[in-house]
Amino acid sequence: MNTLKEPRQVESRNVKSYLETVDVESGARTVWAEFDELIEAPNWTADGQRLIYNSQGYIYAFDLASKTSKRIESAYVNQCNNDHVLSPDNRYIAVSHHTREDGQSRIYVFPLEGGRPTLITPMAPSYLHGWSPDGSTLAYCAERNGQYDIYTIPADGGLETQLTDTPGLDDGPEYSPDGKHIWFNSVRSGLMQVWRMEADGSHPTQMTTDESNNWFPHVSPDGKQVAYITYRKGDVEPGDHPPNKQVEIRVMSSEGGDYRTLVQLFGGQGTLNVNSWSPDSKQLAFVSYELKE
Image (cartoon, rainbow, N blue to C red; front, side, top):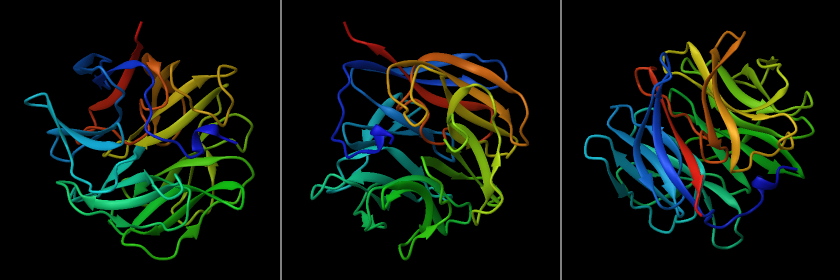
């Protein structure tokens, strides 16, 4: 079982965090800010002006022009992890928040500019990863009856639908920009690999086959490329994505085929958990780390 899918409190990993972007064509990296605490998982807003990240249980917006951060008001939702996704119209943000009553992750939605949260998934644990392009549906990883599978639910709440039923961990479900597919990662072939299925869960297809553990596929807004994070085989258990490891950010065609290593860095958990493509599909945002002495 993936130990990082157990209930957790706000983390403090004794690291410095570096909010970075990388040019997907040239590989040139830009460090936008250094933080003396843990930050994770930047989302790029549709206007290209802000990066949304989590830190110390809250959600923050980093303004690229002023290089300043502002906490987004979320009332009692103050134990957010690195699973957060923006609505297609960028009016709302959905988060995974560990509720005070039992410490389990549930999905909530609140305005991106701040406001009262709405509970979407009463059942727990539920770990958000995707929002459908038409705004109607959320996709997430959930543990039900001792097994982690992929589910969907109406974005305003309702009954959840189970899409996978496979022993081991299925995780990271994210919609393609045309809404036809859900990309995810699964250990069903032995190592953690990237998969793609129809949006209704049919026709699962393995998209990576190398001897690595590949996590969290993110499709570019133009639908042409997929970025994901890679751990070395033997460095981690296939179902685990821990922090503080030497990892790679890779890109490949959304049609499959060979990958290209874009970035090598010290990171892992928190680096690339959510879709962090720029709106023009030319850059990726991510977080790298440095252990404090």
